[in-house]
Image (cartoon, rainbow, N blue to C red; front, side, top):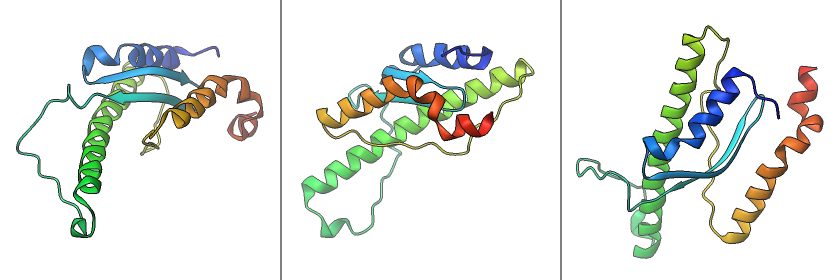
Length: 144
């Protein structure tokens, strides 16, 4: 994949995410012309803790304590993921604006909790093969 100026900057930011967020690691990613795929690992032992944060959940009384704890943990990790993604997107936008490059993000991002090794392997394979699949990507074909 030949990256443009914004793509190279995005790649650099992904490479250095741990220097900005010690609790986050991105072991695998690919920057495509119109999207990015990344596996982001959030280390709960390294996240900053703020006792002012209050978590609330609906219908938790219907769940076991183990299920409640799993939901709370997953929600906290997703919150830290949102911090990383939001700052990453802001950094790229600031770079594009400063460089007078046309650029815009979609407003949201798609996240998925990877629950086991098989799922991790499938997702890693998808990311690694994404560049090779670009020629047949419907968004690529539509842009021709």
